[in-house]
Amino acid sequence: MEVTKSDIQKLIQVQKNNTFLNHFICSIKKDYKIYGNIEKHKIIIWQRTSWTGSSYSLYSFEFDSEDILTKVNDKLNPFAQYSQLLFPLFFFFPLLSTAFTDFQIKKFLACISVFLFLTFACYLLGRRIYLSNKKDQLADFYQLINIKANNKQLAKQHRSRILDLETEEKPENEWSSSKILTRLFTYPFCLALILFGIFGMIPDGNFFIVIPMLAIVGVYLYSDLTMIFKQNK
Image (cartoon, rainbow, N blue to C red; front, side, top):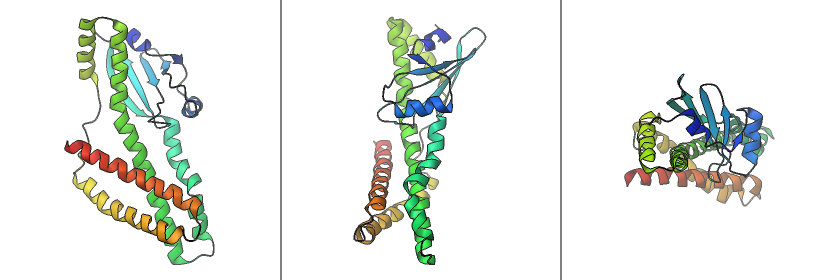
């Protein structure tokens, strides 16, 4: 039994066009419905969850002329891609403002370095959420197809077929040379930011900057260490 276009259509609770505006609206709403954009030989579906927030995936199901599923792709939604650039500029603007106010080379370099690191950490955190969620969410979609099929043998056939069609990347090696080199830079920098925030910024009353900075550093470290320990199990 093949997976067909009608099987995937059963997942969709609300039909919406795959546009930037609709993804913006979906990102701020909390209805957690499954949205879909149906084309002739392709269906794109997405679902915001409490875990992903706005960093949810778009799943593209492609079909042949007989409406049989042939390919599955995924990517980050366009609003999340845009917000990865906008969020650091909006949230850490005080750092940039401080860098150019009463210009001093040491203060300028320190503020720019912190801003660039926090921007990089936000990107890594968003990517972590995206990668860790997409496999589970795709499995949930397939399970819904199986449940709607209401037939155990058909469910097994669906699952077997879909496992062959998945195009997900192999799990990232957390101990690759690139990962190790990245952590040799980010971990000491995180420690420096924590110490700088506690002993350098809090006494001066810069809570608007230090609180989100420490929160992002903490979430980044927690997320990265969780991935390391998870792979080692």
